[in-house]
Length: 290
Image 1 (tube, rainbow, N blue to C red):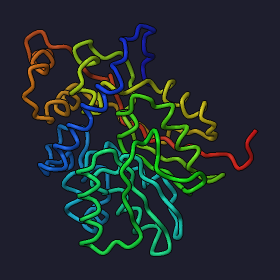
Image 2 (image 1 turned 60 degrees about the horizontal axis):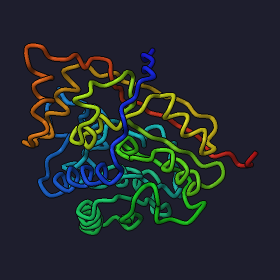
Image 3 (image 1 turned 90 degrees about the vertical axis):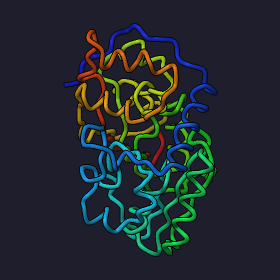
Image 4 (image 1 turned 60 degrees about the vertical axis):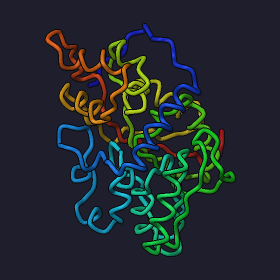
């Protein structure tokens, strides 16, 4: 069972500060073609661990090259032919392209991302590989460029933790889903308080670490939005080595990261074991609102 977080909380960083850090990280990922999926097994995610090998082989290499997820939401989304699927924070499009194969030519897969470079890359990949049932829209997941009751399923892969307003994301997801629609997310959830050096660091936030909230807060945001039948499908708790490797994988030589690296690797290093986990959670928008 995950540990309970303490009542003491650090002040939240300013919204624009968070968005700036996230944009910088994912712009760099989109243009440098480095990938969480191509890093060593010491990192939190690896395509070989997250997706069946047959699925990975069938996907465009351009999308795999910039994948940065922490799970496989399509595995719990119950996708069927003809459905409309929306992916929040679609990046290079790996989960959109995977969804497109599952929903077939009569279905529709829509990716939403706030990074123009990612949208450009995903659109180019879709065109070059003949994906006629997908589209990618530029926008924030807190303010989706979609009409109400659009989607049968909404998925997201390690992105909601990046948002400075997670409750607004869930409200928007509720608005965009059709009655009876399903939310299926993979995300990072906080099990205990992070060390201050990391919790206040914007590089750690953009690396899907310090923006994480507790299971209680995460599920609570879903409930406030109106979701029902909320279920934690599974969770994977990370070791110190996995979390330290994931932050260090950012390979950013910024001055503000020095104290973090010293804390992770120095003689008096802090222990990051059992502080965060990758969760897969599903929820349903009720057919009749109470």
